[in-house]
Image (cartoon, rainbow, N blue to C red):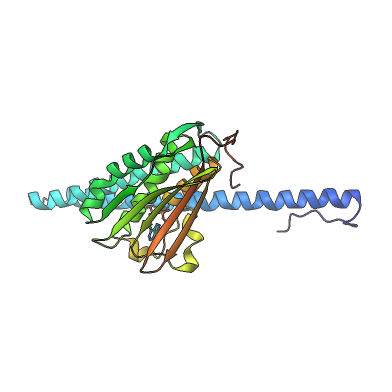
Length: 270
Ligand code: ADP
């Protein structure tokens, strides 16, 4: 169905107005389509763990099990319930962000201390995968922003680096002073991302080849959230990767001393 406004002469005043309206209509259509796809993907992602929870519970009710079988089923239930909880938190974060409700503080944030805290939070995961976190290149630096949200952004990237690292490899976390900006680099030596997927990993729910990820878990929302947070800080996030070699994520943020005045949420992707 073509909803565009037809015009006799595209060069007169009415023609220009119609042109502007047509562009707006096209933007709105894209936004509606994006929301529709997001809602469909979100309900699909919510239904999968719910179905597992239900079938485990039903099968336990159907027949008496040994203690060991009950324990196995309960472990699956706890795992799926945790996954549902993460998914619900992430969906809430994104919808607040889209609605422009996610408050973004503008205060000097000690990035080195914040990164060390994120590293400590993720140390148990890295140890469980025999991955070493190298932090001696985290130098003192301050950016302007919101410490809670920046922690979330770095957490997502470092968690991915650990999840997709090769066992016994090292992840380097570094900061560099580049003029008006602070640059944070998180570099892993893991499975990497194929070149044709690099753009898409920031898309909501996008996972590179879900079969290779199945055992690792994940929702496909982590990088979308990181990108939204960094963009709200007027920063940038870049991803460089080579398949079977590793991935490097480079995040730049305005320095606390830079003249950046306004960290209001930018236009959403609608
Ligand atoms: P997920 O929760 O699935 O990790 P993300 O949005 O954080 O979701 O990442 C999207 C996809 O990008 C992941 O499923 C994974 O396939 C790929 N990816 C992200 N970071 C890395 C990395 N460091 N190494 C390899 N693949 C990665």
